[in-house]
Image 1 (tube, rainbow, N blue to C red):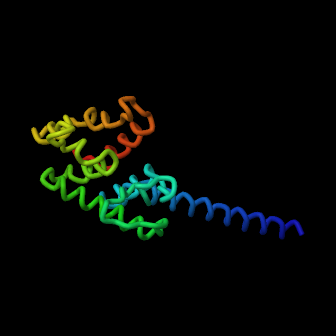
Image 2 (image 1 turned 180 degrees about the vertical axis):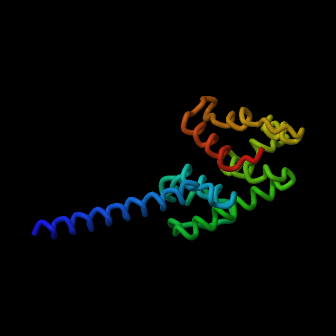
Image 3 (image 1 turned 60 degrees about the vertical axis):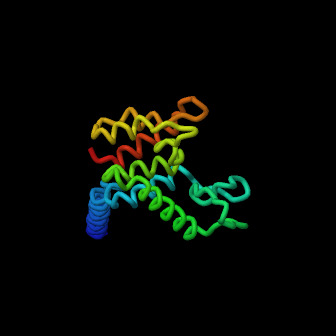
Length: 176
């Protein structure tokens, strides 16, 4: 009887060691987390995380993961997850196109524009001047962290959660 208990204990210990080893192996393979994805996919996942879901009844004209309904669009009910994902990706590609001439910074600028609007970054003749961030990028300066993180205000006040979002976007998408 004692011999059987020892055999069972040894078998259990071996199983436990295998489980721990398997968990450690899986964890070390996933240490990269979101960094294992291509930049565009990182951007999509970051936007989804920070935007959250916009219900058509409570958040109109924003729906899905922050898509702003345009005058020619007609949405009467909530989107499916697939429709919202498709809209987000389409919007992000559109913004990337707006910033295409900025090369490797186009995705970072597109993600920012998705949240704050493109004209706060690009400027327009009536309401906004070209952002200091964009001016610096156009001069070829790569030290843009302060200017990027400046886009963390709402009604003139610095919002900590928006600052965290900008910091995350910068870490995920900026290529010095």
